[in-house]
Image (cartoon, rainbow, N blue to C red; front, side, top):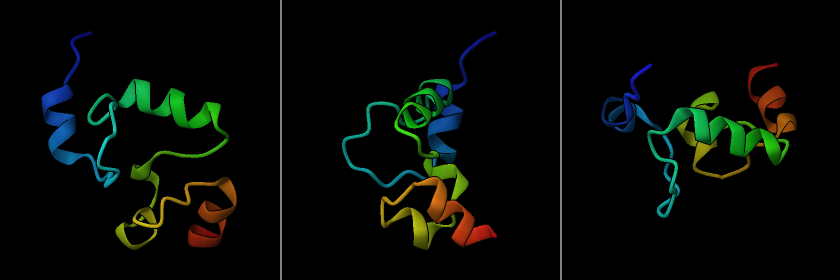
Length: 63
């Protein structure tokens, strides 16, 4: 499967300035799950900007 990094990067909602995984969804998901959190694309913009990507925040946001 071909990586669609350029297309993903255009759509990526992550606002972390030095993110090395911007647009690399498979790496981003693996990274965040290893930290017991979810990636930016799981949150609305106002929550994503807080960088609180915990499962608890996800449940508070969508639960």
